Image (cartoon, rainbow, N blue to C red; front, top):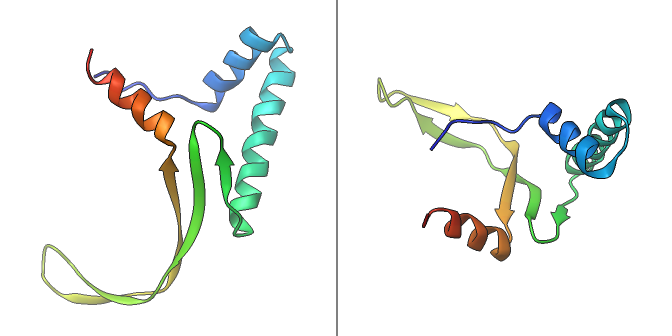
Length: 100
């Protein structure tokens, strides 16, 4: 499998080609959508995109971790992490891509 990465530029180019906005407007639209999603996650809201998946933020409590190289214990402070749960449609779509 090739190691291609989809970038913001790729997204704005796709909007440009598919929707017909100018390149500048397409880039602004993609940036605004990502900004709204980011702001919502920072505020602790879920971002659910139908047929794609749900992004959410959850809190992890403090715990004691271990350095795998040295075995030395180290405290890990509490933190917030972002999670993504793909929709069933997305899971099925990705799985179908693995069969070819």
